[in-house]
Amino acid sequence: MSRFRSVIAGVGGYLPKKVLTNADLAKMVDTTDEWISQRTGIHKRHIAAEGETTSMMATIASKRALEAAGMEAGELDMIILATATPDLTFPATATIVQKELGMLRGFAFDISAVCSGFLYALAVADSFMARGQVRSALVIGSETFSRILDWEDRTTCVLFGDGAGAVVLKAEPGAPGMGERGIVHTHLRSDGRHTDLLYVDGGPSKTQTVGHLRMSGNKVFRHAITNISGAIARVLDDAGLNESDIDWFVPHQANERILEGISKKLGLPKEKVVSTVAEHGNTSAASIPLALDVAIQDGRVKRGDLVLFEALGGGFTWGAALARM
Ligand code: ACO
View 1: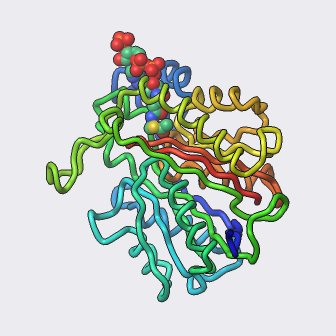
View 2: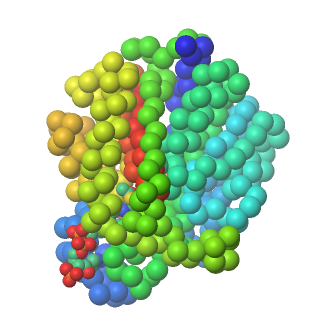
């Protein structure tokens, strides 16, 4: 039994200034605004400026999350940064953020689970906190997918964008209960048999290059709906809750049609779904905290609300989490 709950004390986000619209993309590859909008719901995405890195975006989002939590970086015990686009092969981008924040204690490391990275990082942080090993944590998703896209491949380059989101977790005594704030439950899965459906064709060990993202989009789509629905059913069951208890659905933002398919299966009305995919595109590990930040800023997600997160990414990795805000 947990001795501590991980309470989400602050959330922050950052999007690069440069915006790339579907019309801009239509000048670069053989595509149209109509095709992209109808198949994905995406209208635009943000692209990191030259020299703007994953750690830089993560640092800004983290400072905003710390400010929202009313905390200083020096009070943090741990940083976990989820990314598939680190600044360098090593050191971990999290340690660069640690330095930039001026955090001189604790420890920092990266997690690689692509689009599910934020959920994996949240679950790992929650475990450290439940055992009382850390009292505060920064969980970040930050990505510069623009650097691993093949800008001549219309099947992938229209889908992704850059950005960062961060949450500050604080330990509160007592196991997560029905009405108390904190992470209620998490459920993680992976299945390595499907690496060929979504991957990057380069890496230090195999090619000594960074590589480009490759994807069989329609196969990923089918796996996404089935796997995510299964993870949501499991996390609700483990928590002793059901669909009608959910106040807000804040999913990984890959494709409007995936969001619609899953919310329909859950019986959730559109008004309860936080969707930022139209403006952000798919920002991989950053998409959930970025969407949560938007919904807190505009007043939708409030203290005490039960929020459902879910994601699926390369590997495949996938999962779901429930948090009482
Ligand atoms: N513009 C115009 N035509 C295009 C484009 C484009 N940008 N991209 C592909 N097409 C063409 C294809 O070449 C194909 O043409 P053909 O029939 O002449 O061969 C046609 O459109 C249909 O291609 P499909 O891949 O079957 O299209 P689909 O309806 O499956 O939509 C999409 C593609 C949007 C990628 C969809 O499969 C999808 O969203 N999949 C989920 C993948 C995803 O979101 N991955 C992100 C990482 S995982 C995650 O975050 C969940």
